[in-house]
Image (cartoon, rainbow over all chains, first blue to last red; front, side):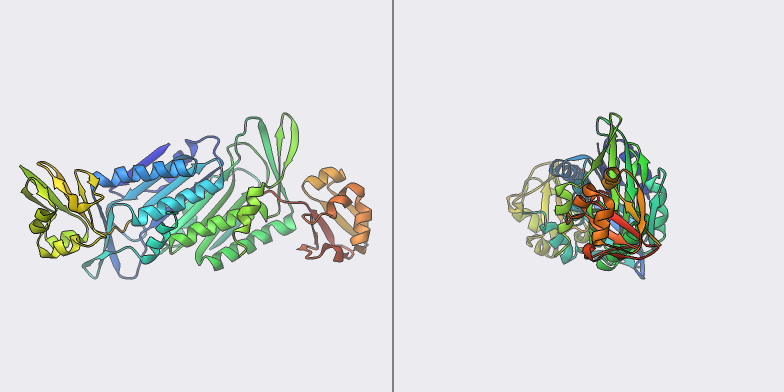
Amino acid sequence: MKDIRLLNSPFIPGVLIGPFTNAHPGLGGVCTFVGEVRGEVDVELLELSHYEPLTLPSMEELAEQAIAHFDLMGMLMVHRVGPMHPGEPIVCVSAAAKHRRGAIDAVDFAMDHLKSAAWFWKREKRNGEWHWIEPRADDYADLARWSD
Amino acid sequence: MKDIRLLNSPFIPGVLIGPFTNAHPGLGGVCTFVGEVRGEVDVELLELSHYEPLTLPSMEELAEQAIAHFDLMGMLMVHRVGPMHPGEPIVCVSAAAKHRRGAIDAVDFAMDHLKSAAWFWKREKRNGEWHWIEPRADDYADLARWSD
Amino acid sequence: MTVRIVFLGPLRDLAGEDSREVPAPLGWAGLLDAVGPEVAEQLNEQRVNVACAGKVLGDKTALNAQDGDEVALLPPVSGG
Amino acid sequence: MTVRIVFLGPLRDLAGEDSREVPAPLGWAGLLDAVGPEVAEQLNEQRVNVACAGKVLGDKTALNAQDGDEVALLPPVSGG
């Protein structure tokens, strides 16, 4: 089962992960990562923009790669877009597999790619002014781990 | 927050992970792994035994190591003991951190140690007969990754 | 007979607009002319990608947008 | 004045019981005697651990269990 979504409003990860897990009888393990908007001291609002014609197709392709490469039974990949507040989930990736190694590695792989190879641009509002966020050097290094 | 439990009866991971996540305002990400009893064709029942005086203290120590080593805000580690049926969750490990890398690596680390360095013994009933399960060579190899 | 240029992320601020219509067809030189010197400078950087009609171009300088195509200017991303 | 020997996992089947009381004090040689040849053979394998009074022994042959101590025989584990 491949369940890929872009959402414009807040979501509760557990509401998605329960049915996702139940959709794969016989699984050995499910690994899930949920990223939240960090509540840095002066961040009032975070906004994620994207480019519709590329974003969802590239997430679908990323999930297909992960499913094939890590022998998954299914992958859930949900990403918020638009304005959001500190403490709200921004991304949720879940992988179901027969064995734990595949599930954990697939989540790791998907998150690295979503961070620095998917078509999202993030800016945050501090003291009433918007600031664009560039990927950190760490994010590029994380991504490079998968390119052997 | 360190929340380590041995449970004698079925549990719903989402019921634990929601409050665990909410207990860490300001977190960047939460990674969770849930292992289930696999429904192999002829397995009727799985039983996990343990040695009380060692099991919980060793899980507490493992969580403390993970928290220190991966700079976690908190760790949840729940393990079933006793008889259980295919499809039931047997283990749930969740790590909350400022950054995703720490959360994902901590879950990976904790699962590798629970699989082959914690005081559990597993046996399964097939066609009315009990069979002990030994750790797979893969599990030892996974554990060795952390010993540099 | 137009091509729509879409400015994404920080390039939107630099361009001062979300998108702009220009006459078709549109090649690389025409694109650099159309977007103004500040955006053109960014476009010349390797880390800025260009998509045409929903496909990211392997070689953006080979841009050849036809009537009705959308050309998206894609600065470095920051998701997750 | 007794030591309780606890058989874990598959060693329980081999011993035919969950635990056994033996006179204190109990050392390594006494343990091998007390558990019977089949379990003793397992105990001699490096991958089988011994805990005394809630602590896993670094060197199980240095076992020195006193009155009231519990000695646990720990075969290779398989959790998660």
